[in-house]
Image 1 (tube, rainbow, N blue to C red):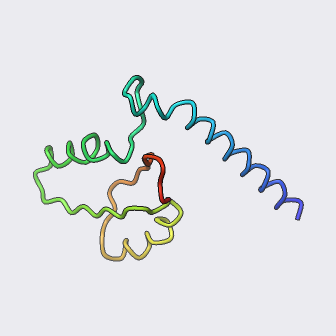
Image 2 (image 1 turned 45 degrees about the vertical axis):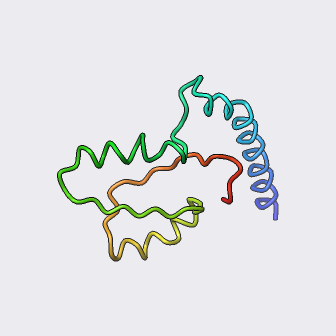
Length: 99
């Protein structure tokens, strides 16, 4: 029980800090006034399209929207039975979000 309380407190603090981080930076990211992390509306242009252009092989792209990272990790073993995952990364969603 003591560890559960510590974990709950740490989770609450992490959520508070992340919320503050988003509040402090989000509008500047959207305005393009500062270097922004990859976001859902820039993902294709910034990360996927350059790979398509430089690739000489066929590319198979699967996009699953509204999927949290923990959900992906639960599904990944089943996907790995049929496909080879060559790269895995995260990006920020635009707000509000369903995830």
